[in-house]
Image (cartoon, rainbow, N blue to C red; front, side, top):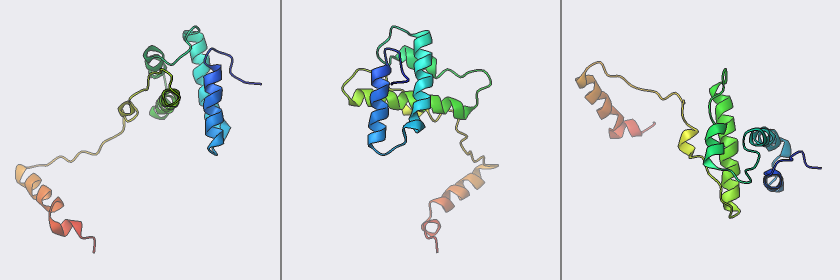
Length: 132
């Protein structure tokens, strides 16, 4: 018996069957799809496909949520959307650039212009490319 009951139930079940056929554990994906289904049933009960509206509402940051939780939800709906489009269905696929939002990026700040030019020169010299 399927744990899914919304209009997206057959599609979510097919996603889990596909991942399981590839050798992945069903339990690895089932929880996130169940959460997505509960969300869709509560906010978009009549929708039978993944729309942009559903996706953007799903990836809104929740109170007290860390970045990892938000990324996990974004990844789940993105992969589900990609699965549906691969099956020839219409679905909104969250751009992967949104999954990287909030990742700390290292920045180098140069104290003087001459130091910046010197540093850039060392990075791009042939000596810097030889590890030994």
